[in-house]
Length: 123
Image (cartoon, rainbow, N blue to C red; front, side, top):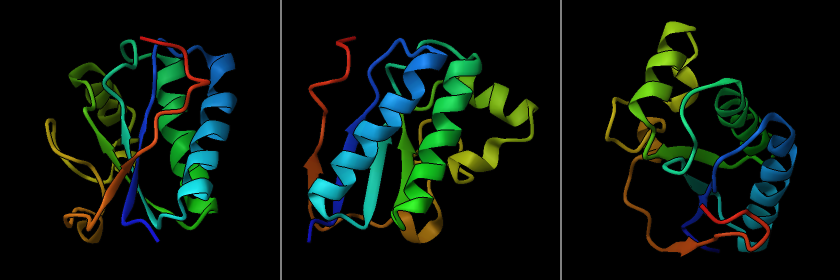
């Protein structure tokens, strides 16, 4: 079993793209057999409804897969909007520039397998 799988969200993401992003994330988690996932959000384009939907739906998908989830490279604008909406807990309670996740999720992974899905659009 892999310690963690890394999933990179490629942007920009529109609302209609979110189900596909979540399906690719679920596939990467299932293929890896990992109990942890780190999702890189650096390529998300700004902080709008699609970005919020992406963060929320990825969290829900991870929960359904019983996979611990952490976010990385959360933009300042997205973090601020989630905080203003009372949704910052979706990020796992971290500040900007940190890997977001629950305390037990922030431990260094024994092995991280990069899982960029070829179906994601290039940034």
